[in-house]
Length: 172
Image (cartoon, rainbow, N blue to C red; front, side, top):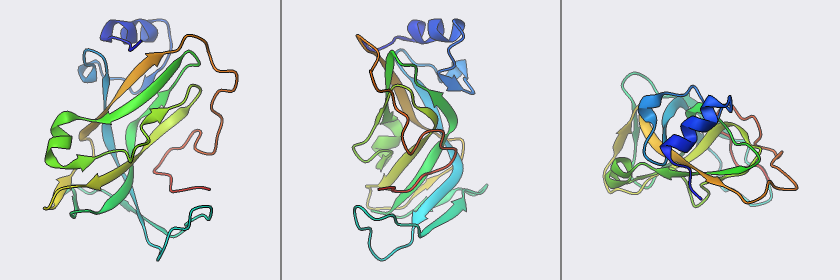
């Protein structure tokens, strides 16, 4: 079951901090918009070998003039907001429709957020367009949906990406 705007507000009124900071203007009928943070990461290694950490990542900040993402280029970014997924919920992010229509994709087939996760969401942004796209910090770039689970998990998330506060690169 997907939570509606009223369900999300009810969780918040019960003191469950699903999103911080929470802006009621970002609330949609069944989702909450999340915004792009200024911190980005760009892989700078010859090859990424699955099973081996690629520690060569260039960290940059998106300035006032934005960041020009070239066609077919990939960056790691994160949301301004921190999310807190209670044990009875699962989160899922999707690219906002207007952003997707420009050719941007915010996750690389990994949009789920496990029960028990706390932290900023790392976004895997790729420009699928044939022309550059300029992005800005603060841009509402994706939306999070909350799904109610029948039962809480026996093993909630407590993995390597827990409490991340900036874009996190591939970790084996």
